[in-house]
Each structure stands twice: as structure tokens, then as C-alpha cells.
Length: 276
Image (cartoon, rainbow, N blue to C red; front, top):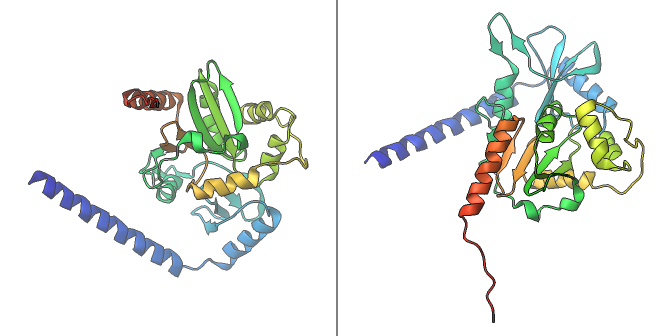
């Protein structure tokens, strides 16, 4: 009886959440962009044709606009849209995080910095086109992880030092151009792309990149792969068991997830080949 009651409660919660989502979508559609928002969106798309700008909206701060690039957000002044501010807008008087709930709503998070994706099907890591990723090996390389990352993404830059502190790992980094492809291509075309990636993400040093290079690169394929796998933003990590983690996490969380994946793998029966 308890299981039935709990199941009914869950169904009602799901139905209520779905109704709220429909109403929110209807409200968003009904509220057309203002002329100044439309002008800014047009100007940004013209100035940065390689970046997919999806939405511009006015904030509570006069002259400051919220700019969405798929799952990434920045703040831009209407008087000088040359400069982007990445981070969160916080109301110190109301003690309210203005940006956080919007990120959570768009990525399916419940307020945390990271979430396990439950809507997307597991993706076996060894079935990914690993040749299209930057390969980094530390120690014995036994623990494996794939990361969809963007060199222009502030959260990716926060994640990279955490990944750099891991030992006995093999990390496959798929460069996805959610905020423009010039920098991903310049990194991939570098003589030592792994080192060029590391120097840029850890030290903001672009000296090893090859801007304007015409080498064969997988950047467009990586973007299509991300869309096919329903990667909503960067960073997104895919573990050896096919599960994934969206967003920035600290090193302790990374180590805990590696331990969980290893425990699951150890519990699975060993496959033996049948002899004729």
C-alpha cells in the first residue's frame, strides 16, 4: 500500500512539473523581445558569426543584458557589447542568486553545480570517435573519461585544474564550438594540441595555438556528435560506464565518481570467450 501511494504521489509531482513547464513556455512565447533586445542580439550575431546566440534579455541592472549561447550565459552592456562578463549576477540586498535558477532550469539541475543526466541514454565511452578528441594520459591511464569542452567556456576553465590534478587517467577532450570555432580550430591545428590546450586552459597562454590554420579538424563533427548525444552545454563528462555529469565539479566529486564506476565494473561478470 505504501508503494502504491508513493507511486501516485510521484506521478502527481511529474504531472504538476510538466504543467508548470508548459505554462512557462507559453508565457515565454507570449512575451516578445523588446526592440533594444532585438537590436543587441542582431549586433552580437553580426560581430561573432561563429557563435550561436540564442537569447538576449534585459536584467534588473540598467543597461546590462543577459546573453545566452545555448547553455552558456554572459552579461553584456548595451553601450559596449565588445566585452562579456561570465559568471553569476547576485542581488546583495535581497541575498538572491539571479543567474543560478535560470541555469538550473535550462540544464535540468536542481540548484547544484552539477547533475547526473537522466534524460539522455548512456553512451559507452569506447564507442565514441576517440580519434576526434585530444588525448591526455597521466600515470597508468587506467581510469578513462571523455569531456565535451569549449576553450571559450568559463566553467570549462574552472574544471580543467580539477582534471589536471587527477592521476592514473586517460582523458579524451572533445572540442565543441558552442562559442565560436576559431579557438577550437587553432588549438587542434597546433603542433602539440594537447600542450596547446593545457597552456590555454590552465595559464590563458595562446602562444602554441595556430590561428588561421587550415588543417583537417573534427570541430564540426564534434558539434554534431554533441547534438546527437544531447549534450546541452559544456563541460559535459561521459564516464566509462556510459553515465554522464553536466557542469563543473570539484576533484573530490571526480574521484568519487571514478570509484563508483570502478565498483560497478568490478561487480559485473567477466565475459569469457567460448571455445569451439
